[in-house]
Length: 316
Image 1: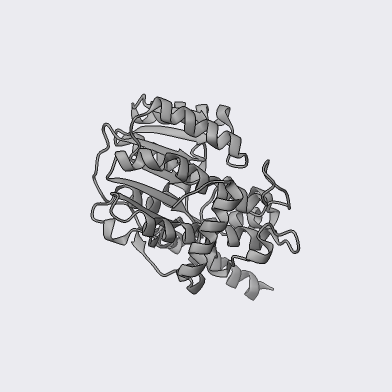
Image 2: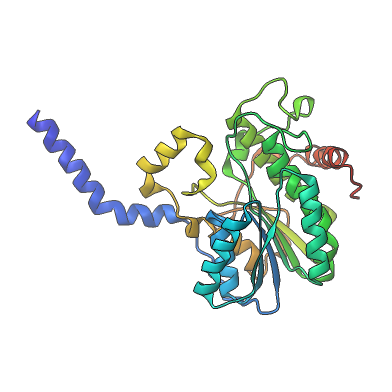
């Protein structure tokens, strides 16, 4: 018993000593560019909390006019007020956007286009994770509808404004879990079989495939696009999973803060010289490998066409 207690004490003492090094290792890459953004306009979805909020904070600090596009406007106003006070940038604005409802997406886009003549950066950051089975207002499985189709439609509606503002960028927040995702065209809405964990993975694969196909179609326009894995981040995204909430607490030294998780989004929004890497996937502020499924051009093109059909749009 005494031996076991001694070993346990030694183990925790060791963890205490090496904890700073562990945290530094798992913090990941850092966006190191000094690019400033006075006069630039940015839209970030889901920027009322977590990674999106920290992304908005840094872009506001660099002088951008930042639109926080989120479902919970009160939470958005609270975040915007905090960011304005922190950055001394009064140009942090909140607009209603519910990605689970195409009417809300269209209303947001209509309002934004009436308000702004330019858009330099669109960061598709918002998302849901491990939700019980449900459908959006338009009848789409929630992960697919919010994480993929919602951002697909938003990008479509804002694309012409991005083009006239070129050089411009679209950043799609995906995840490393796209490696286990599949695009199941025979059951895209998961009506035959549903796993809330895999539904999230499928939607994150869709983000990478969307980025790949979008880059191909945007060649020569001055608009480039990138998919990012933010890392394993302490955020509200895991709120639907009690197990993940517990694991996040137990392994907090290995989990990124929201500020650390925002670094790759910031890198892809700001870093100079990334244009030749349009359509690629980034993690820890550098390009990294995607799954074989995420490199399948035929799947990417088919998903694009199916997405257009589901949303009732024509996007050539």
